[in-house]
Amino acid sequence: MSPTALTRPLVTSLIEDAVTAPSMHNAQPWTFVCKPATGVIHLHGDPLRRMPREDPDHRALHLGCGAALFGLRVAAAHRALHPVVRLLPSPDDPWHLADVRFDATDDADSELGGLHDALSRRHTSRFPFTEERIPPEVVDGLRAAALLEGCRLVVPGAWHTDTVMELVHASELFEAADEAVREEIATWTRTGAAGEGPGTEGIPAYAFGPRQYDVTSPVRDFGAPRRVPGRASARFEKKPQLALLGTVGDTPEEWLKAGQALQRVLLQATLDGLATSLMSQPLEWPELRSDTRDPSSAIGFVHMVIRLGYGPQDQATPRRPAAEVLSFG
Image 1 (cartoon, one colour):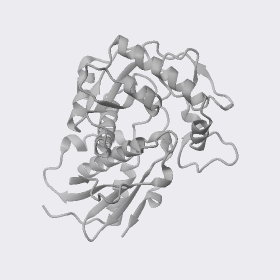
Image 2: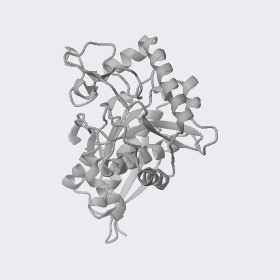
Image 3: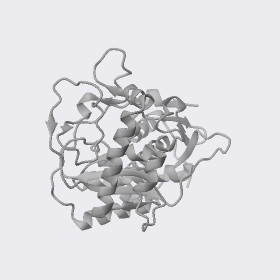
C-alpha cells in the first residue's frame, strides 16, 4: 500500500486526538514532527517535561507517549488509514520514540477505529465510585484489550488488593518526607495561585476530587499540601476494584507497549461505562514497586495501578493545542 498524503489539516486532526492521552501529572511529555515528503510522523519524548525525582529513568514519560501513540493509531483507523508503527527507530537518539506511516486502505481496523468516540470521553476521575461490582465479562474484555498490545492486566485478589493499598499508604509517607518530590508535584498542579505554570497543562484544582474521610481507595491527593477553597470531603468506596498493568520486561520498548495497552484498556473501559483513575505513586519508589506484583502472575514488572468502577467521569483536564506539540519538516 502506498503512504497517504499527510495534509496539514489531516495531521492536525490526528494529533488533536492523540494528545487526549493521559500522562503523569498531565505533563504531556510529547512532541510530533510530520515529514510530508516521506509520509511519516515522528513521535519524540520532550526532555523538558521529564520529572527527575519521581521518574528518573523516564518510564512514566514513555508510558504517556505510548498512550498518545495509541491515540494516534485510533485516530488513523477512524479515518480509514492503516498506521504502521516502528518503535525506537533511532538507537542514537533515546528521545525519538516512534515513527508512524499511514497507508490508505479499504480494510481499516474497525475494532481500533471503534474506540475513537472514547478518546474525548475518557477522563481520570478522582471522585468516589459506587460499590457495584464490575461484571466478569467486562473485566475479561479489558484483559483482552491489554493482550492485544502485548501486555497483561491482572485483577488482584483480596490479599493482593490489601497489599497494594498498604503500598499506597507507604508511598504517601515517603512522598510527605521528600521535599524534592513535593516541589516537583507542585510544579504540575494548578490551584489558581500566582506564579503557577500555564493553564494548558498540569492538574487543575477541579480535577483533584474531594478529600477522603478514610483512605480506602488509591486516589492520589494532589491538594493535600495546600488549601484549596471550597474543596469538599467524601467517603470513597471501601472495596476498590483494581487492575495492575504490566509486562514481562522493563525496557523502553516495553514501556511504550505498556503505554499503548494502558490507553486501549482505558478507552475500552470508557465504552463499557466505567470510570477510571490511575495510581503510580507506589511505583515511583524502587523499594515499593517490586512488591506491587503478584509473584504467581506472568507480570514481571507493574507499570500502572488502575482503579475501575462506576461513578462520575469528571471534567477533562486541559491539553496543549496541537500547534504547540506539532511541527512540520
